[in-house]
Image (tube, rainbow, N blue to C red; front, side):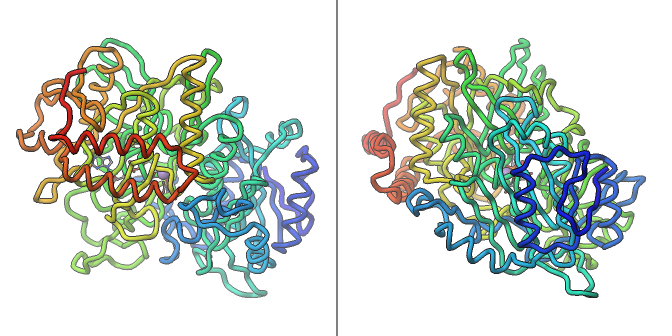
Length: 617
Ligand code: GTP
Ligand code: SPV
Ligand code: MN
């Protein structure tokens, strides 16, 4: 049970609170001036109590318990629906440490500006103190943190998404670093003022201080803006720690694939937000004999293991997944995972008290209530669910959860996959010639923007390694770090294979050509054949492409022209894309590892010569 102590900052006597955690809480209690402070223990009783509180306050609405047991819908403020990249800041000492892809503000300046709005911002509210671990508590790869927040929605989401436990406070005494995460919705309540269902502030700051490993977040309660262990810690701050300590913190799913021969492979794949990680992680292979087990769907931490292999863990413990597009047909495993104990945010609701979103069924049920709580009018031209509507659910409910998903040693990685959402230009699959060429492929990934962040949906932007919104330091140094990790692995063991994929090519009617989802196993099968040396590949200046006939497309309804659109790079488009990549990479100036532009120029030269050099490998 968590214990409420008002107005004292003292931890319950049962908690062995390290002095630096107590100082942190004291300091911020003075700044935020909450009415009460609650130290969270991560128990079910605590979650139940906070859920009841939110139901009474209107933040959560219970769904029909017969259809969706112990599940709730939250409707956010209409201005608080996605990550706000324009208000996300990397406050390193110098601007050049943050690099051209990040918003930079000098740390002292940012702290002055934020303290201005944070002072007294928890008045009338409770400040929750949430100790958590990213990764299994006893893993050498794990890292700890403490988040302060005035949002019970955030506390309950953290219970699901990460490992929250007051036991950590005991261990933290001997643990040298923990990440300070500070969050407020920025909506103080005056004496007698009624609260709203989703308190937030129109001014938002998501600020990261890499030197002191701190995160300060103000004004939002949505997703990565507010669940600070997720993108803010496990990617932006962790990428800095990883660079300092020689490992990798990546925006990757993590799966175990078993072939019909019974051989096991571990794959990690980086796709930008809303580009298919959760779906890949829960794949139901369409080819007989293949099995995919889920280990993680969004973030992977990787480090060299004792035998020189690259090992990986999922630092999270739940899914914060995109709802629209999820159906029994596309992702039955997600649908099964969501049977109950789920918080849905910004989905539509049916008259029976269940959830609905675009893509769940071909036609929308009548009498829907839209994500803002109004009767839905299908002729309005708007969607019933918000395009970035999401579900929050524990990983244990996933029927394909792989055994040992929380093994403190992690799993040994056989292949890394990079991808993006591209209507054209990028082939279905390509293999890198080696690790360094794979780093080039990662650094030139681009993707059409999605509703996961503010901004124009559909616009192509460069998103190397799917990390542009999530790299906590200069990406030129990040590319170099990837080269360095590769050299270390080569010296002491071996590097995994690297592939690039694109599920999203469209035909002239604007339809996806590749069936995707469970049929993506066909591409995985080709990768496994490559790893095993069972199939050759065509040498293209860009990389190694499947030879005709080596990709298993039996039973698919694909014409020759479909296949050619999927597999054959269009030289003119590729050359244009290289120009765009070059313009992007040039922003990094002298810091950019020269190998990247050298490789780009080599591909351009080779493509200039009659469509490339076609020889079998
Ligand atoms: P984040 O949680 O934002 O990081 O997203 P994600 O990368 O996990 O993406 P997710 O798997 O949730 O998929 C996002 C959208 O892409 C959903 O609407 C899916 O239905 C759709 N999608 C996923 N995989 C495929 C695929 O293979 N083909 C097609 N056409 N769509 C896909
Ligand atoms: C993403 O945008 O990549 C997400 C959702 O996974 S959020 O947690 O909001 O970052
Ligand atoms: Mn994500």
